[in-house]
Image (tube, rainbow, N blue to C red; front, side):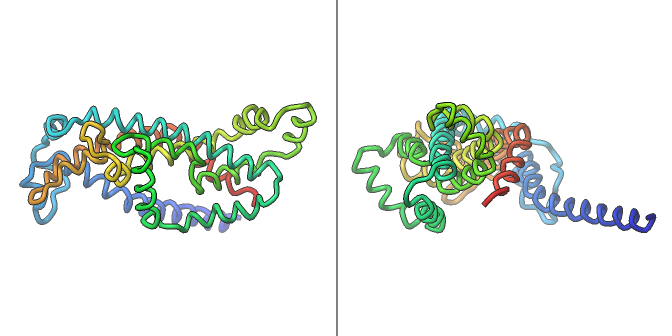
Length: 280
C-alpha cells in the first residue's frame, strides 16, 4: 500500500513538473513582450538579453495614445466584435440544433460537406469574396466584417455546438414536443439554457479571432477612422524603422481584454470543450 502511494505521488509530481515546463514555454513570449514594452530602444537588442529593464519606461504606454488614435480603434474593434459574437452564437446554434435535434433528408450528407469546408484555405475564397462585397457596395464599411456572422457562424462553431447538443437527453426534447412546444421554443427555452458552456466557448473563440483579425480589416477598410486595433499595431512598423517598445506596449494593451475574458470565463471555456465530445 505504501509503495502504491509513493508511486502515485511520484507520478503526480512528474505530471506537475511536465505541465509547469509547458506553461513556462508558453509564458516566456508573453514575459518578453511585457519587459520589452518597458524598455528604451537601446536596451531591446542588447546581447545578452536583459529581461529586467535598467530603467522602466512607463511612458511607452502613454506614447501609444499619442502615436495612434488608440481609443477610436478600440471602439471600432469592440463594435465589430460585439456584432460578430452575437451573429455567430445565434446563427451557429440554430444550424447546430438542426443538425443535432431534427431529422430531415440529406442532413448527414450536408453535415459532412460542412465539415469538409474546414479544409478549405481562406486564401482560396479571398478574392471571390472580395469581388462579391465590392459589387454590392460593402467595401470600406463594417458590413463585410460583421454581417456574414449571421449566415451560419462558421463550420467549427457549428460542429462544436452540435456535439454539445447531442449530449442533451432526447427524452427531454420529446417531452417538450408532446407538450406542444414548437421547435424554436424548444431551441430557445430548453437547448440554449443547457448549452451555456458551449455557447461561452464559441463566444470566447469568436472574440479572440475577431479582436486579433488583421487580414479582414486590412482588405475591406480603407478609411483610417474605421481602423481596428490590429491595424493600429501595424502603424508602429515602418519601411525602415520599427518602434519596438511602442509596438510591444500597444500589444500588451491589446491582449488585456482577452486575458480578462479568458480568466473570467475559463470554467465555461474548458467545460464547453470537454462536454462537446461526449457523443458522436
